Amino acid sequence: MADSNPYAAPKANVADAPQSDGMSRDLLQRVASGQRLMIMSIVVSFLSIPLQKAIGPFATLIGLAATVVAIVGAVRLAGGLGRSTVARVLYGIAMIIPLVNLICMLILSSQATKALRAGGWTVGFFGAREN
Image 1: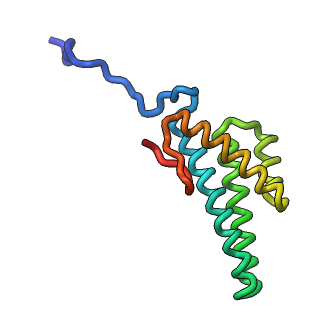
Image 2: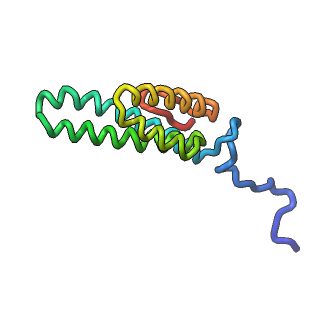
Image 3: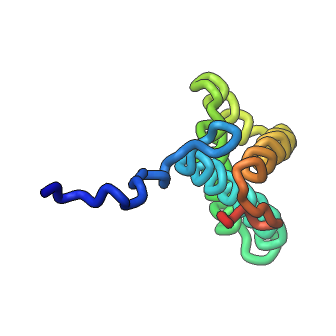
């Protein structure tokens, strides 16, 4: 006798199956985490401006940390979206330049929102979560 049941439903590993737009769950998680990092860096950098007036040079370090988080978030998000290595480096460099970083963050965030919604994720003000 065979050990398998011929009437049992077939078993398939669907955890890493591509989504409808061809992006895997891992890539969508990478996009979501990169977007969340960029959003948090914007919030922290805006909070560090009044803190610089109140507590002085220590708040400048907080602003620098927010810039580093923005770089990591942009590179992670661009990688999740399938951008080339050159594009990731350019996005990382753009995060250092004031005002250009905001424009790049808006562009990347809108692309991330489209990709995440196409993958079935819910996107809110502070990032995305999986349904």
